[in-house]
Image 1 (cartoon, rainbow over the protein chains, first blue to last red):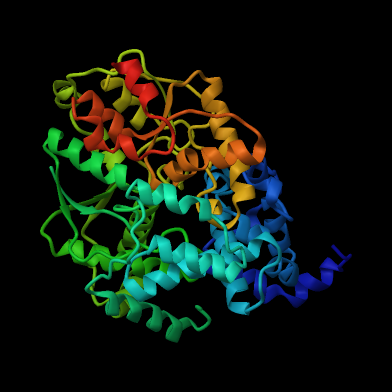
Image 2: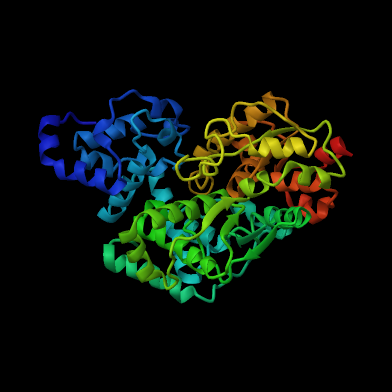
Length: 193
Length: 287
């Protein structure tokens, strides 16, 4: 990370810190960096910033660094951090708020994080179309958009043999109603792909 | 007891055995599971990272439909569906502004009168004597590592029915079934969930830790309560072996399959044939 002047970023990005607090519903300013969230996190090995660092960076207004980091996407939302925080900061909710903000900013997440966003979009794309997740369509979309064409390809035949692979999607009668939910959310919030 | 039942999108695909065994066990216990008509996806693990409103609206459509069924409680097997439904239920009950906003877009307004329970809780609160009376083939000698994962027990203010650090509901059910429920270290460690699809290299390291802890505790098998946990621990055991040069060969069951086995339901009816790991090992232990 380049060196930054935190006194400047706190002032410049005060709105960002406040917005993440409001969007996540979490008292981010209460964090005193005990590190318990990071100690229990099962995914630190794949993160560029650790969970306690993310909370500190929110306090310091480090918006640009956070919105283009991998951590906020790699977080699996397992909520171990949330459960253990002595200040009752639901860290996973803060990660979620950052993820939503990053998604709406339109930038492609870096490295491994890109594949997480692609997967989310592929899953929700099938829900918007059919009303339910369509597992086969999800994997196909995911592989096309991530460029990893043969990801999970070795799964196909064994799944099929076990009757676990439904080749055609099930369409919910109220699929149009579900599609409308997506459309209305887009209208209200903008930016949901 | 009657429940409005939410199958979840994996019900006829990757989570097939869970669906089969849940219904078989519920029947034995006199639990009536009435499927929510025209249910739709709860948002799974994806909507949480896209929009707060979408994340509440998708499960709320189902709660709105369920409310019209004349049943007080909703249950579901999938841990992710459970957490999504329970989270939306809590927010919809507590926040009137949000409720009005969500109700204006789902087409299935929800007043906030339901309770949401995981199938683990629904079975776990059945009178132990009722469960015992159905056990005709106790799983004597079977050592089970009960794995809860994340979404079933966390965050506690949403889930709350069991201890988030050392949950015991599945352990207690397995003990009633005659098995030995092991004290082991990784009951609630995350399996990586959808990272198994998006970033398998990351997920295999998480799965490896859980399998290693189960093997170390001398488990004959792992019992789970979530289709994603099952997919990662069962199917991706092969990926862990390949990518990390391990040689795991431990069967992974839904807890309802093992309970069903102890109730004398045939393994085929419970879905034993569609696992990726070898389930015969367990059958040979319990005979």
